[in-house]
Length: 417
Image 1 (tube, rainbow, N blue to C red):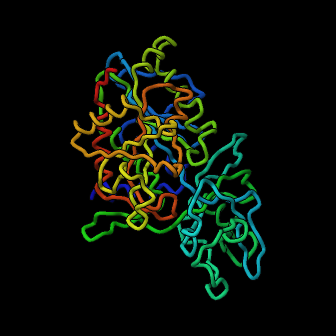
Image 2 (tube, rainbow, N blue to C red):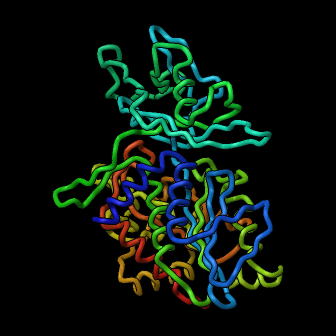
Image 3 (cartoon, rainbow, N blue to C red):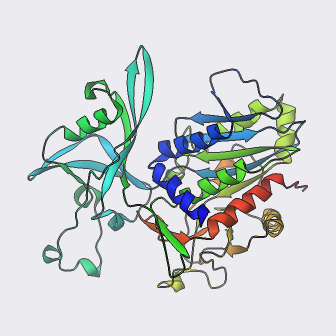
């Protein structure tokens, strides 16, 4: 249960992609890692521990072995979750109140955002002493709500309803013009006139909770971050004599990863190349490397069991999910599947196989996109959960520990293909 409670705490601190990176950075700092900056010259030492941040929303950490290395052992996850982002000019004068204009980020279950305490987090940008400076924002109090329309005015709501973001999903914020801007500025100690730009999103204020007759399950916002948390913990508790161990968490997975900080960017390649002495060393190392692309999978829903494949069905608390797709939306093939099973058996954790029902297309993840820039043997794995992309999701309490143990074993495994 300790892993679940720690995960819930991690999620609570990681209210958006920027705070997810900040939470990971704090853990790395606690463990003696040194921050590198892409614009500086690097001096990477044997036995050194380092991390690099891009755009404040993606992070790559790595630990060098104490001797020459042969390959990279990489775990990749993502920092972002579906949400609503504030538009640049976000105040709307409505009847008797001020509401906020938002647009959707990623594919969320919109109804799950209704009638919950919400707030705002992200980053603002100011100019100070001739330099552009970023400040993180988290309005750490119940601030907003998106109210449902009463059933008396929508008699058919329980027969199905198509939500419209522009009309249905604007949160109520205040009775006064400018108050939200004031609160954002006050939260970071600047005048609102100093704010030159922002990336701000809504987040669900409900805390995570363990539930079930015997604590078998937990529910929380942003369970996407379960893989980020567990791969980070596995990374911090691992070591390798012969390989560079790498933890990567990318932004923008929920919208296709096609940004300068996404898995489809040059970020991973840039970092790995700079670790190596030359192009030949880099290419030889990548050819012998292995990556786990870590993102959650759909557990069989007990009320909608027919939505799952007839045989490749996965369950909460069933262990590591190995994800497979014939059209290569997932990178797993026979070789990488065998590697994952081998590691799981050595770690003493269960595993299960996932494939979409053949007539229901699934989502995508970051493994195949990352491979466009750094081509190496990769498997897609995750943990089983329910209500994916709801503002409050559910997963198994034992699975996080399974993933941490598996990742720890992965990093120390010598894989010869």
